[in-house]
Image 1 (cartoon, rainbow, N blue to C red):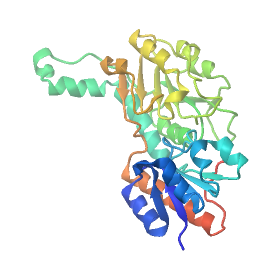
Image 2 (image 1 turned 90 degrees about the vertical axis):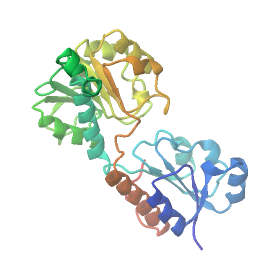
Image 3 (image 1 turned 135 degrees about the horizontal axis):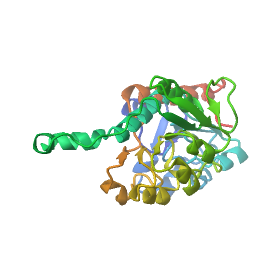
Length: 313
């Protein structure tokens, strides 16, 4: 008899195919009567599978008293009610590390795109303005600048390796200094921002980090500083960021994430000093397949009574 799972939202088709051929899967997001669905599987359901954006709230878990594991397709688990899970002995797994390289690549791409005005340049060329008006305005170099990384975890470390290829000096702000990092540790986020040209946000979303990039930090970054966010939109005071971009109080931003996804502040659409992405930093076939495999492997290990490959304390 297969184990019964609730799948909160759609995942990669290949992952869903294996899930549904291995387990009895109920698609929560497709149900016309979700409370009735939960009631109908309350006794049988032993696991919840979700993604980092959707997560799973306590209101759902309360209706599934036999759930013992929540497996998250993604690194961030801030959308999972971890307090409820801890109180009720529910394991939480995620998919770290396998997406670090692609997210780091996107951070570099965003820094180049906003500094070198790649989107504006593409539009300039397509509109025939090069021939009609001559060369577009000059842009800013990335090479040799000062980079600050907020959050020196797996993604931050992968990013630092790439930044060294641009001959950038690298400093970072983290909960504590990393003994395995050759880069400069700065305990204050404000001081980190004050000392760099590019502030990369790669920290996890926690109660301490939410809203950490505030007006004080942006003031420290200054009118020639850029901010690149590939973590969570909630780590930045978004209304303040929008106003600083509008007023030229920072040079620009590359944003893959936003506070109320999939909504993006409309004011950003009109700005040429920001490059936007639809939370797609890990959006490659290679990474998503690896993430899906880790979700499946964690479930298999759990049901076999073996140690999980990844878990959240």
